[in-house]
Image 1 (cartoon, helix red, strand yellow):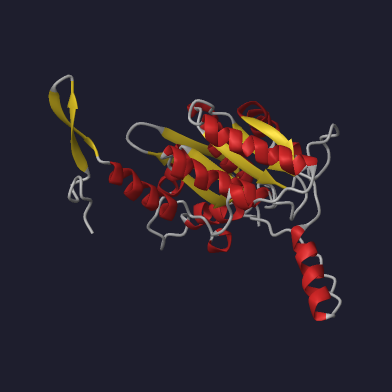
Image 2: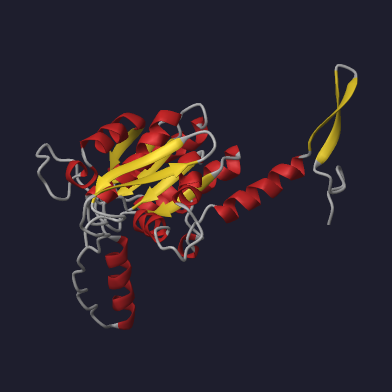
Length: 282
């Protein structure tokens, strides 16, 4: 059914200083918001994830929720992003997606959600000659989005190629002053030799950029998946089985000499310089 004001044109007439002018009809924003939410790549499993449905149990979770709400309220004036880091199952992704939805709905932002390993897989697939998309076609929305959520940063096995690719994303958004929201299980200890630290997994340059461009909040609490599993087991009278430990799945690539992946458009050139073929070391 067409809008009663603009009759489907998405424009309406207004009087400004006695002169009739055209401006966007209110229904246009609703249409754009619906499209931006559909394009945001939010996984179906998080369809109900909202800031209003996040239930904090600890002080750090309450602090994280407060910062997420503050980000939405102050955007786009406040361009500093957020890094939610801590153990699995404490609601980091829920918070990030709830924030992303809110800023798209309330502020008309263009935003995207990318699970980090999925983003790296998409970039790597462009090296296959049977794939028509280029690196730039994959990375352009990542680099240019008003708000980007990078989920599970550091879960991938690190390599020179991984660090260069993620460094490109982080550094480009840093220079453009675009807000980036990160979730990660990595730690940031004083001892930077920790294999699960931001320093080791991302490299010093990217860690430094994130420290400057984002506010960091460590989120602690019970693993909600364990809580749900025990609750469901109590209802059925069956004790839950202990899950097997899973090892990290990396994104290695080939060994070999120096290589360069160039990402170009008409106005800007992005470069990845690294040794090891087109996707790291296999």
